[in-house]
Image (cartoon, rainbow over all chains, first blue to last red; front, top):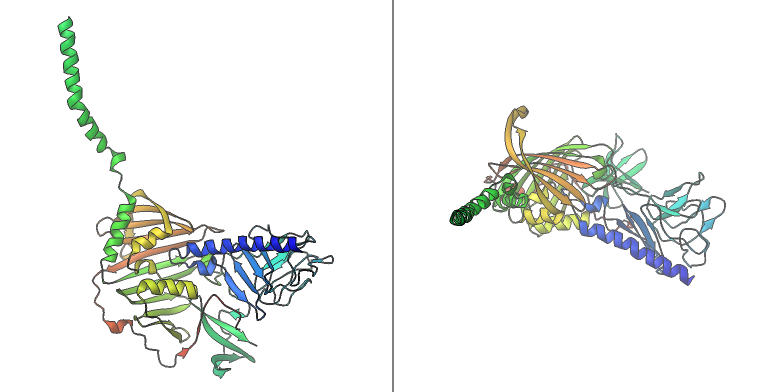
Length: 201
Length: 262
């Protein structure tokens, strides 16, 4: 597993370099790189973190293990030819049934093998095509090559909507000014300069 | 014959002696040597903006969806910006999505989405330069046309453009229904993240148009047409102070760095 560990660290460093390069570019002609080029950091309650940028993704667990994926599909393979390192380093990461895959919890703290992580980092679909999860990070295709969802068009995280359904009322909920319609609470926020609404669970 | 030859050679040498500087001077005035320096033109425009303590301008901006967070269609907006250096700016952007206003009064930064009557106010005791940096870094967006409100627009533009070249002189339609025209210097800027073409008025040295093409899939573009430059705008401090409209709800502004606290 040491080989895997070093490998993943190197790849994480590479991915971080991509991200920091974007930071250095900063804004251009009224367009913030933050919205499309910088990458966003996600953290988990367990200390893991993931970065998702337009040119790739990288995840690092609380124990320092990490995985990274580049824009063009080149990425990192674990010791069994799959995609990501497990939390303890000895979890399998390749699923024979669905093709290679990786998983993580919802904020990218890679921790276990499997084919799908609910709301998590990444998964391989039944059509053996890999997808980036709503919170980003790396995924693997059936041949064990990891790819990252590339999003030059900046997008909002899962659970954000850009407009409210009609007929809402304004209420105070959980200490916030919220909108309520159809049995759902929506919490308005400004995100990247735009008004978005978070579906409150 | 010998003396004739000597005389001819001497007169040729004399002719050459006087003719060469003339030829050199002629070369110096050739079209190639006269080509204006694009960087100097850019610097001149920026110096004019930097020298204005209070100014205002309008712009029409069209932005491809790939450059808009969550965007799926191109966005067209009419923007008005008023600046009172060093730390006050108010900007309004009207688009089909509604009207948004930004206020910075040297103490706070406020953002109002007038269409849904939502606003936020955060402490921001910064100059315009500091405000633009902080908003960009923490909140992931740039106040509209901030490049031209900062204290040193040239430095800002050169940070984005690694090379500036002169592309020629052209006439730019302007005024009511574009019936008027203004002669412009056309510059090309090469940048790491985007290239840009800009047109600067020959007479007033002010920016008339900017087209930026980003080095991303699909080569998304921003088109901005500038108008109504007023470098002696009559403004008061109160114009930059945000007062929430009646019934407006205060909401938070989420930093881009952390999304785990949902």
